[in-house]
Image (cartoon, rainbow, N blue to C red; front, top):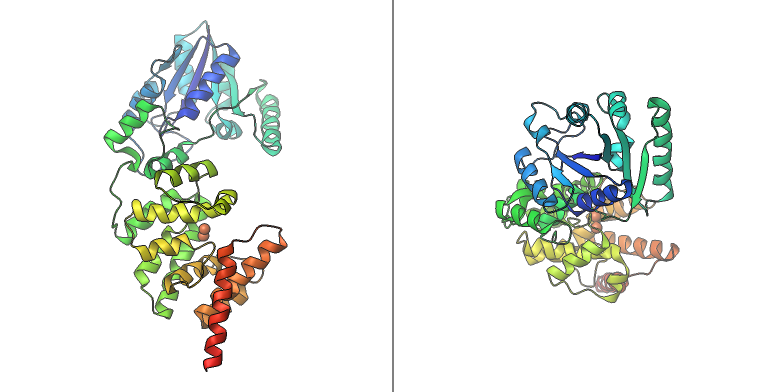
Length: 402
Ligand code: FE
Ligand code: FE
């Protein structure tokens, strides 16, 4: 018999897991696939708020139930200590002495295989199989080939590389979608139902009126890791500017920490959010997907976090600006442009202007954005042009009056 072994954290299991495993089973002509959730994954720490090992086992059972040829095993959950694959493979080989084992994994795991515990012994006992998406770009494809060559050289076994057009979703993304309430098309129905019933992964929790520290934790957990510093930077910069220019510091900090809260979502996920929260999008926004996160972020701030209108509208216009902005809107717009992690050419002069005068800083920031987009051949949002012209006019009027 040909037996597939598919381990992982399944935190939570999603349709990407299910579809990839099915495609793998078919491509290799496997008779059975053993799906094995890890108790304590050796390679990574599970994020806080993860479901317990027994809960992940229950969810994984639901994800693969009714699929012929699939069986979910609890052997890693029952075993004490870290869930080393080599222990699992050893146990399975003892049990299936006359069968052929195929160890299935996604690209991340495959690329770090040398760092696993006892890779040599794993390869002796099982055939490595890596699955990736067809549309993986050339660079990723080359990395997989290179790794396959390296592993063959090291361990004397050529890994099998499979491509499929499976669902593009990770567990990290699935957890985000659960919080935003748009995970429906990404998780098996029974899995989603249980997560919602048990209120796992923050799904269906009441996020309204959170104290700032909690708001910060939740917001950062929804960001990509690489974007957390930016969110914190905008938050602190907005707070300082609010102090200087006489706006509400607490609201500035809340808008700052939330301003990019939906930025990690893909274009299609943004559109799902827009639909769920009744966000009306202009044609321009639909065509310029990088603008969507401001609108969906504002909708989430309102509907999920129960933030006030002042905060929501500062988030809604943080990318484009608009004519006649409130002080808080200007602050968040500018903070997004000049927080300490920003390094583009010209940022220093905008920082200098903003230190002296909020309007002058905002005008310069808008001007810089408009020029930059034009130079790069991108469309410029009408709101930005009108915002700049509005500020220009206002400042000229004040000059004349003076
Ligand atoms: Fe943004
Ligand atoms: Fe931002």
